[in-house]
Each structure stands twice: as structure tokens, then as C-alpha cells.
Image 1 (cartoon, helix red, strand yellow):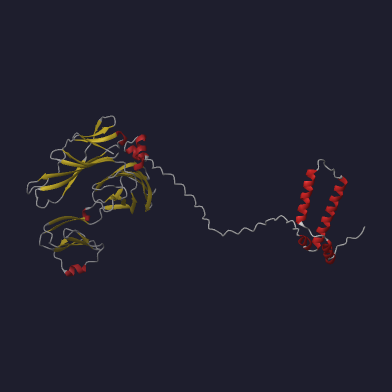
Image 2: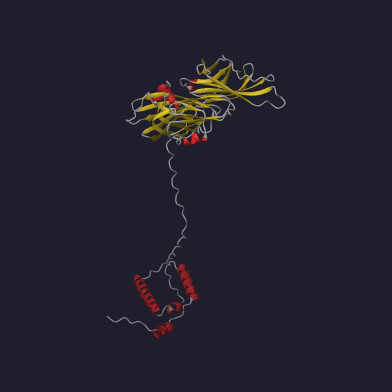
Length: 471
């Protein structure tokens, strides 16, 4: 096999010089002449197959050789021949995508917390329900007006617990219990020295206390308070204060002084331990007495009593309080078995279940104008205004509400039930300037029910045959 010989550049140049120049016009003319000549010949001339195959092989060999030579000559042969190289199919290389600028993507907001389930109002205490004669169905309807307190305070091993309240806009029931130590059990013979309910700066109220249950170690109370001249108790602060547990003191004769004084006649006397009285008191006698065994007792009637260590007592009267007679008790009026103070305060928070009516309607004779009606399961009340001519020098008579005024409740079935009237009160303004004989009066009447009523069965209140729908 012969070695492959690659032509040099000089050899290729010589080869190109020896090749006839390609003449495109000559090729066209020759091709047309062959076509025309072929069309004039009636019979086809059969080209020898062998000749065609030889020509094809020679063409292929010639093209391959020229291509090889052109590659070696860095493409100068095809360029000289006017033959363009076939272009390789361009493959586009995708440019690298630009990195997107970082962008602030807000974090999804945390889902809102699910609303807390609505707290069910507390059940009415069984002892309170029994005391008020409330059945189970009515007790369920009263639940929104119930408040659980559960506050406890302890002093001297005695514990006071405020448990529950039931109320409306002006009435309040309070259940509380005292638990006593075994050393000092509860007894009917013992009592609290002070027991009080207060509503901050409110003055117009009254209250009562009943025992729900008593055992050897505890006593449970149901307190009831009614407040006057107040829009609503809800939101107000109530305080229960209790002091000292024991018995009232039983005085002996030597613990009581029977004092007397004359107007304009001051005096000083010494009562000796044997009961004798020295009316001729001098500074020397007073200086000779031992010191005070107890603080000086001062009475608003003008007397003072100073008890000395030897049992004697110095009594003075200032003479400036007119003629006076006084029994002076020299020892406290209460003997505590347990000396302590128990106090609890809390804010009232419950739903007032009252239905109401507001407006202006004339009633009765003399004329009253009713302005508001309120009816709750626990109580009812009505507000009136009145104008009446008052003779000069006389006072206005507040007894404008008839004794038998025939107030009734309208039920859903159309029937009517009597509505009690337990109390009434009023106030008057100053006389109108220039009209001294005219006095405007505000009157409130109402009642507390012995047994709570069912409001779902009530549609209106009837007063003086006038029906007032409630909502």
C-alpha cells in the first residue's frame, strides 16, 4: 500500500493554474443546446449504464480530492474556485439567564386565632334557687343575671367566701359563707358585731340578711340589697365588711355612770372606787390621783370621763350643752370571741334582663306623667313627674299615687295578673323663679317580687287602664 501524499501549497497552486476557468455562461449555452437537441430527436438515445457509473465515481473522487486539498490550504482552493463551503448548522447556545434580583416576599400572615368559645353564664346556685322558689326551667332563664364571684378572705382562722350574685339594675342578691375553726364553732349565741354592705359613694340603699344554712363549722347567708336613684348596678363596686365575732356585752352597775349636768354650770367630780363622789375637786386632789388606765372618754353631750389606775373616775361637764342626763357606758358594748375584720370588694358584672318602656303619658288625678317603666324577673319600678299648685306656706304632698291603682301584667295569652306595689318615694325641686306656687315633683314607685317572674310570658304593663308595651 502506498503512503498518503498530501500536496504542498506550491503543487496546489500549479494544479489550479492548469485547470480551465469555470465559465457560467458557457455552461448555460451548452445546457440549452443539449436540451433543444434532445427535443428535436424523435427517438431517445440510450446512454450506456457503464459510462454513467464511471463518470459518477470519477466525480466523487475528484470532489473528495479537491475537498481534501482545500482543507489543507485553509479553504483557499474553494475560495479561488468561487465555491462556497457548506455552512454548518448553527446551534444557538442559550445565554445564561440572568439571576433574578432577590425580592422581598412577605411571609404569609399568621392565621387569626380562633375566637374563644363564648363562656356560658353560670348556673344559679341551688340554695339561692330554693330560697327564691325558682324551678329548674326558670333558673336556666336567670343564668345571664348570675355572676360567680368566688372570693375568699381569712382572719383569725375564720374564712369569709363571697360565692355568687343574682341581680338586675337596682336589686342584688349575694350568697356568702363563713367557715369557723373547730376551736370556735358557729353558735346561735354568737354573732358578728358589724355586718355591712356598701356601694362606694352611694347612700340611697337598704339591705337585709337571711340564713340559708348553718352547721357546727359554717353559716351561709343570702344578702339582699336594693339601691335607689341609680341607673344600673352593673359595673358598680360592692363591698361587704364584717367585724368581730362574739356576744353583746352585758353591763354591770359599776360599768354604767348616770351623769347629769345643768346649763351654764360646769363642774369636775371624782368618783371613788367605793362609789362615793367628791364634788369639791382641787388641783391638788387631781394631782394626787394615779395616771389614766384607759384613754379619756369624750361624749358629745359635753361630758368627759377619765378612768384611773386605782379604779377612781374623774367626770367633767362643760355646762355648754344645756341640761343633760346621760348613761355613760364605761366599757365596750361587744365582747369578741374572735376579734377580726373580713372584707371583700368586687365589681358587679352580669346581664340586666329588664324589659322597659320610655315616653310620656298622663295618668291619675292629680295628673302624673309616667316617663319610664322597667320590669325585671326580680323587681319592677316606674318613674313619674308631677306638677301641682301648692298654697303658700304649705308643703307638697308626695302621696300622689292612689292606694288602689290597679297595676297589672299583660300575659301572652291575653290574661292579666296583679302587680304589687311595695314602696314609693319622691323628691322635689326648688320653686320655679317667679312661680313660687308651682313645685315639680319626681316620684318613683315599685316592688320586689317574692318569687322571680318569667318575663317571656309578659308583653306589657297596664296602669290606670293604659297599656304600656315592653321591649
